[in-house]
Amino acid sequence: MRSVFRRFDVLHEGEPLNPDRDHRGRRGTMNKNRYSVRFGALLAAALLLAVSASAQEVRVVTSGGFTEAYKQLAPRFERETKIHVISGFGASLGATPDAIPNRLKRGEPIDVIILAGPGLDALIKEGMVDPGTRVPLVRSLIAMAVRNGAPKPDISTVEALKRTLLQAKSIGSSDSASGVYLRTVLFPRLGIADQIKAKSKVIEAYERVGDALARGDIEIGFQQVSELKPVPGITIVAPLPEGAQEVTIFAAAIPKAAKNPEAAKRLIRFLSSPAVAPVVRETGLEPISR
Figure (tube, rainbow, N blue to C red):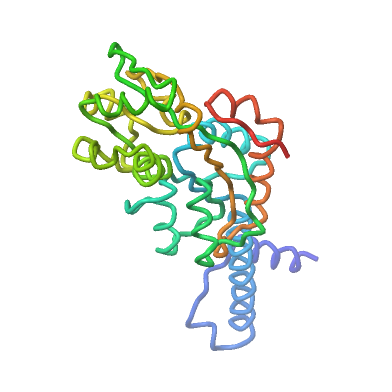
């Protein structure tokens, strides 16, 4: 019995391999076998840990309209599920490198994307996202804002909005969904696109329209309510009036190249659940009931 326990102790404590003895008899062979088994077990354990860690994380990129709600809800999801959320942020559309379509085209590992409907439509059409994973989350309105202390122009009607745009010294809009709508649909419909083109500025997704307003770079600015609301130093005048407003649906979906679709589904279920609706409303969005 003593020799059995001694041999277990040696194996447990880890006797160093001696190459000079390994090729000379049974003890060297046994040592080699022991260490081969032990190395295999360690390797298997390491692989298991890696797989387990991967299963406990989900990579997300959200666009600006849902960002404030997401920042408040992601930590809650982590606490409730023990799934670690790795977050990224980028525009629904546009040419910036961080824009969600450009991230996917580069092959970034992303499990969940949250973006405006037009951007998601394009990704589905290009075959990068399975349409069956699409889940609408919120409705979002476009609003106009000014720097704190500046006069609040009238935009209560379409005609009042048109006068305000013509009288403004400078106008800012985003390079993403809301700005694309304004420049390509609304301004041409109002018949003023050419008249205001020289004083219009596109704010790229590196910053929010509200940041440019707060610095005084532009006189009036337009963006989703939820993107203007968290910016200090500005005042939201009002949403665009009926007849000019564009309701944007922000939705979540799972890219076809997602590494962890199961965790992605859990996150999307959480973000679309009635339990998170109060937080979503507080950030300036309207939850879509499921």
